Image 1: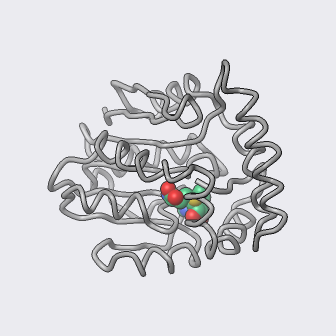
Image 2: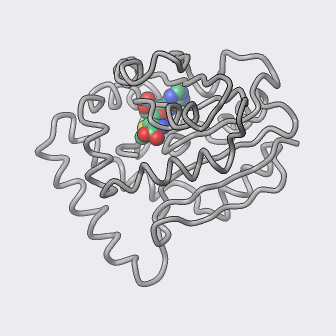
Length: 228
Ligand SMILES: C[S@@+](CC[C@H](N)C(=O)[O-])C[C@H]1O[C@@H](n2cnc3c(N)ncnc32)[C@H](O)[C@@H]1O
């Protein structure tokens, strides 16, 4: 879930993830105190059924795709446009099909997947609505989409979150390789739609039964929808 773009063009986003690939997994574990594993498991449970053909969009270093495979998927395809992130993913599994490509122009046939997941990826897209409609296009009617993404909590946790997210993470980024990327993380979350608005966009992209649940006191949202 580590970095994201405040408003970087796609080439800048890709270059940023290429740079931070060596520390990406370690930063995730550190920043989430290991909770990211649990969130990925919940995401897979929400969308993936045994035997499904699954697409993991913005797969990065591959943890969500590997979790989908372990859950009994028939076939899992992970797609990402950062070659350095994919290099790490390939080391984790030779059974997932890793594809270098852009989520905004998915190189797959219409209705060719039963389920799609995206973990901490949609926030980085240049065109969120186009990304959602591409995901809808490659899912068969009745196929399930699960989107795991950072969000900003309201209520008692909000001040702690601001300290963690807006002060401590960018400070840690100053001493890590490729770490300036971490100053983009709070910016990208700030400009990203809240959970209700994201649910509306998912519906407009052609999904029904769209619901979301907040995890970890509201710092992460899991949206699920069914392709119409
Ligand atoms: C924060 S990482 C998330 C990685 C992984 N899904 C996870 O759960 O840890 C975001 C990933 O999205 C990828 N990405 C961003 N925009 C993309 C696009 N348009 N097409 C493909 N990948 C993209 C980046 O290269 C990066 O690997």
